[in-house]
Length: 112
Length: 114
Image (cartoon, rainbow over all chains, first blue to last red):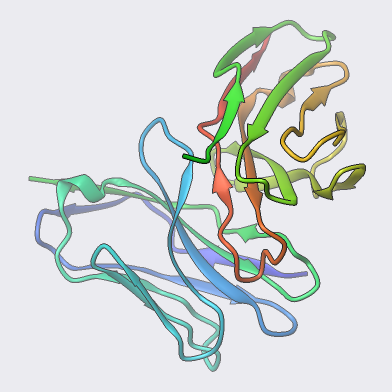
């Protein structure tokens, strides 16, 4: 079945460091891909999404490019802030499923 | 502003008791979902609904039930709570096409079964 694999955390960075969180997927058909973020004590909220190959999603300085050839959707940010500390979830939604499949999540901690 | 709310936010119950978690959304979305979040597992789908009177089982539905009598609400019932159901539960909603439309999540309910 369809699945999402994320790099294990926690990821610990200093403020202004570069961030990459790896995400790869297995799916039949042509999934849409999402990154959700969960701040402490809150529910998940959409960070960015891409609905077809080569699309780039971006928001709040984060970017991810839908790479069909490598089945990947890695999350990147050039300069992280303490306020980016959260858990990040990669997810896919495939045609016909009409629901999301999530990765296990990656915790990011950014220190001053 | 439209929103999705869950109640209670925290619940402690005993093994064997029936528990109902409420989810209410004012987005007028057709699709509603219940997930549980456990360390190392991400979010796993329990039940979902594509509209009034429609319900479907997710990957971890055993021991849970839902009903959809109106657009706004999808209560989740644990028929006989077990310690393995201690978790954080999230409700979400989306418009018709989940492939492209955002799912909006509630703040979560932390359930402890003793």
